[in-house]
Length: 283
Image (cartoon, rainbow, N blue to C red; front, top):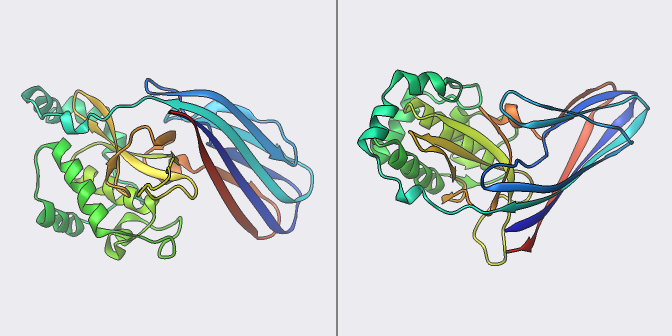
């Protein structure tokens, strides 16, 4: 699958802004299954960007605007090809995988993705409720798949009930929200089960007559570590394995690590308008 992604962020300020410093994480990744073919950033007012790679391996662009302005536009255009085959249903929990999962080395290696954050924390009472529904399954692969289906059936996708600051322990009680909320809840429960899990941000391609949701802006899903195998992507918003429709951009412990646009400025309040288009170029 080959896609073109156009992502536009427009900030409108109540008063003039005389300077701003910004960082963006909008460049899709290149890995064994996904290849970034082209990428371009346009910033208005014009500014050059400096690039660096953060702790989690995300490409970060930083730019500074010194002139006064009342609007800021950040537009990125990417071309990406993806070749990813389903495999989570073919994973069996072997004795070797079980030994790895129960080892101290495994826990030490993935400790950042086992530790709860403010976004992902869920109470033990909330985890117990999940166990009551799906069972305390010792197989981490099967537990992750069952948890994904459970959350898909429990949650109502509704952008009006939560905001960017909503945390997992609140979202799990609401049983409503967007992909960010469902991903944080799933990560929190997986970590409480001792399964390393991380947050993925990117884009979702939704073709004609598709039941997938989450393509209006950036999408979010999770990856869990299958012992001795590697990271496996699951999309609890849609109850599917993350495959060729999922375009990976950022990875981290939670949303705070992969926020697409962050910045500080001197001026009045702001209004943000975001638009994303994902076009299939070749399949």
